[in-house]
Length: 414
Image 1: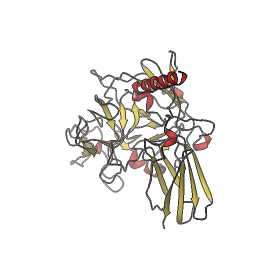
Image 2: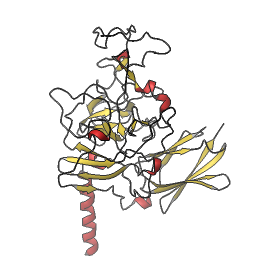
Image 3: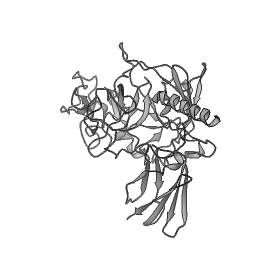
């Protein structure tokens, strides 16, 4: 009888978890903040997820579980931001004046790292905003991120270390939420908006302007100050006004999103996508632009700890959500990809979303010497191994979930 009651309770728990919003269940939680630490020994990923009837509160340091740094020419270093982001569980389309997608964090990735837009917060000739991807690229680390003055680590473009952006055969996972409560996906979605048409890479509807005189803004109005002449110092694309939005040119609207069916929202939702071009390089506007699609809650916007942006106080009753391990996890071998392989430097490990939780990865050389250990690896998270410090040769990565062991060969070439 006790076993029956336990089974019923377990089924009820699983059913209840299944009914929770993806805005509650999509976060990459740190199962042990004492053991799992990232840059500068700061606890990594999301520490706590709490939810009420209307909102989810995400507590995070803004430091990911993957390896970050160094940032060449950037004097800033990543620091614990102690963010508590508030994401509505009932996002609504804004039918009035839209809220501008400004500077600083505009959303948060599922690992607690901030999303920034394309603007690097500096101008040329007073009014021509610079493209952060172009001007700040030298200071990006291997995961295409860097910290700003207050130590807030962030991504202006698709976070290649967070999900497998080479996987063009599956719908991209939710990789974050914008501050209007609508999800952010990676680069791949369904071919049509109703869940059919196979899988395709989402195309931005922005392009470089044909008019390269830099005397007008993208709407064709005369700029108060002309931009710099197109040159090797200021090539087309290095300034935000170098781009124009063309309705219907691609799959997405001016915000870099669309209303569509996704795996997590079978009834449809507005969704933002982080865009890549044909070479899988970031494609403008990278994250989002213009205005938010939905109504933005107060409490998240703003740059840095000094003004309270992202430091919400929880004043309502909440339930703490913990990522379930599942009763069959230990019976499932870890399924993962290693790319690129062969490599000349870094490799990325992408675990399938059906893999078990808390997998241990161990890297060995050909002599069987243990070089590195990665504890508590979680499904749907990308992990980085830096092989630049090791000689060319063959390496073996062992992945163990407690009962089963899977091994893969990694080749480091010249």
